Length: 538
Image (cartoon, rainbow, N blue to C red; front, side, top):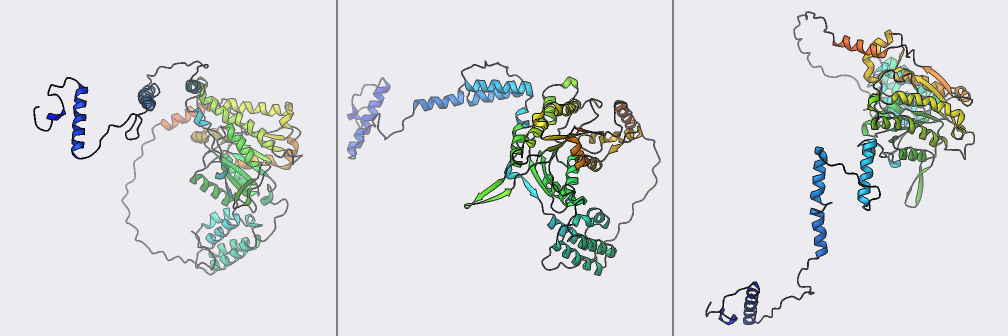
């Protein structure tokens, strides 16, 4: 360019390099700055006026994206694993890379114990999640109010609210029952007289002091640990029996959900006698860490410190009874031996052995003559059913525990054993799937049990007489009901399946017409007023 404002910037020869272009631009900037009286200088290499990129940080960022352990490579490996196309590379145990050794160890665990093993043994126990239910004095008053107001069914009340269950609950409950008896008597309830009679009996029983030998104090000196408590389980029925005898019960559940707590609250309310306590704690007994943590929690005071003061929220307990009923769903044949069967055995056998050892050690320094009485739930099913995984082998192994009691005095001197062989119990998580066979089994001469019936038999193995006998040798009990090797369960199952598959006889359906709708009627049932200081029943 010739002339004009750029004529003073230098030669008019064509620019032949990038450096020449940069020089021309710098000259133009300086010229403009001079015209405006401004000083402009290029930043120095070490100056703070410009951003400097750390080459090491840039390399690290690139490695995190495109490196062998970067986002792209990790995502690719994940996709290949999901598609089953990943190459299974074995990393030597002495590899220098710690991450490589960890991956090799995890791969070995997955191969030997199953992909879900780590999750299956993850601890669930947490002391702060333990819940104490000991409010029978309060639920008794609510039961009385519901009975007096006509809210609860009279027949159900007679079954659940037997006057002897109120013995020892105190004068406040007695006064409450007396007041509601008057309300029921003055009401227009059709069964008001019967309700009044029940409430009067409750009012007479509540202030009394339980006497030795009463059913409500049968287990009042016992601290029982019951594992595997869930709705419909034998363990839950055992807890109900123990609470009815005034025991302190520590019940474990694999999941302590709102629904499980609501179930435990109802269980306590419908069974507990005065003084009974129920601790509900979450515990994964497939985890040895949880077994140890549970024993530690049971045997020590639990305190909370706040504002410089310390409060004992749970006193140390010395367990006297153990009912190990925690059990997984079992399935599989001998051909399926592997991680699943090993996981079942871990919970059904090895966890039980560890629990016995841990709980029996509690109190050895303070209770010299203390012994833990264990009710080992045996079974006549030693592979008889078939298809139930490691169950048969585990039940056979319980016989070995009984035998070891005589030869391993290190732990046996603190333990007594009762070993019932439990037969067919209807409606449980273990046997519920076989309930369609109940009629056929009973027709073959086998007695089947309900959970309440078998719980009564099991707690009967905890009397003073049985414990005294068990101190000399383990006590065996036959609760099979005739379920033994002479019953061909496979044939019964096949016959039941064939009958279920047989087409039913066709019958002509009777002619029917839809009934007219029933007109709505206003509810005129009398509700007695709620007294001052009382809570209206829900």
